[in-house]
Image 1 (cartoon, rainbow, N blue to C red):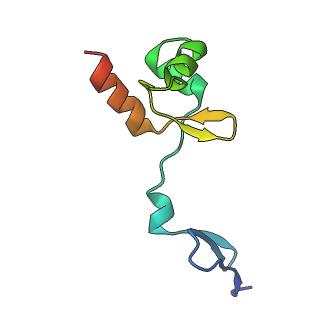
Image 2: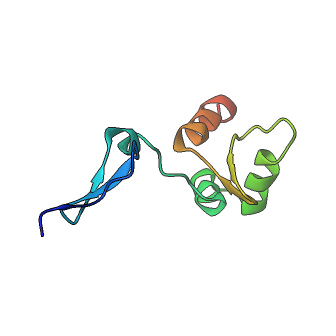
Length: 85
């Protein structure tokens, strides 16, 4: 079957000929890191990561997804460059 199955208007993901097609826009998206992954990178506890991300003026920027904290790799890198000198 070589027909278009699903293609959302202006969406970043589409199904064409049974294959997932990812637009350039979607390819630019970063994979978000979990609290545990950031803790492993920084060699600190998960609580330390939550504490530094959950302040009114956080030292470690995060993305909130509901009650979850997620981190962009570039923000973690920026934190290391700024605070770990």
